[in-house]
Image (cartoon, rainbow, N blue to C red; front, top):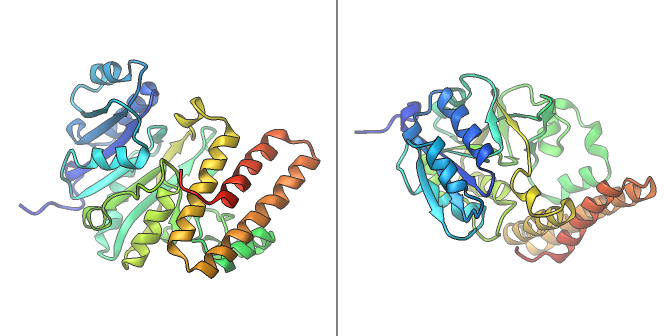
Length: 309
């Protein structure tokens, strides 16, 4: 029987847990309250050593649990979770992303009625319900020049998603990329791309999968009526400081850019990115905002290093 793209019972929802069982349980229960059957929720325990497996089995007995003895990285774990079940679509979400608006999963699925759309992302909110800017432009010398010089703040709202992140995230539209707290994939796209890219231990897999999907001719869609609260750094913040995390992000993005852009475009893009980060680092160092300066210093080190993590 042909699987229906819009049937929530044909959806596979995957989340990865790493020693944050409370968040995972909360995220899974929110999905189930929105209509996702428990048996269609896959939790991957990624080498936790804090009793997470037992707690998840106890609180989510009808969900599918995949267990690894050691942490194999986010993308590899998420891909393994998707292999546990067959579905018409795959909802990949961080375990610190909690469904906020009722009906959000079905709104994401509805976007797949357009056969050209391969990936759908929702509107993200911070814990205080302020906007979390998850839509980002694709990497290119032109985009990074606009962002590095601060000109992106002057771009009109209707053009913002193509050049910056200062967009109100208020209307549905096609986008270049988004940060990956919550992604819905058409099954055909998921399988064609081979899941999330696994070159890096973590980070930048969201941006790269968007880039690869667009190269294959698929559209990426932003649906603001689907809303999730994303806490951010729920697992990683327990293990690494902000400077180390920023360095890992920078290295992962650098590796992605070097892989997918021409040598000249990659060097120019990274140089502009590093210049913008260096300027912001200098500013925050001068005003003695040590936390912001440390994070930017880590990003700069990662961009310049340019190796995989």
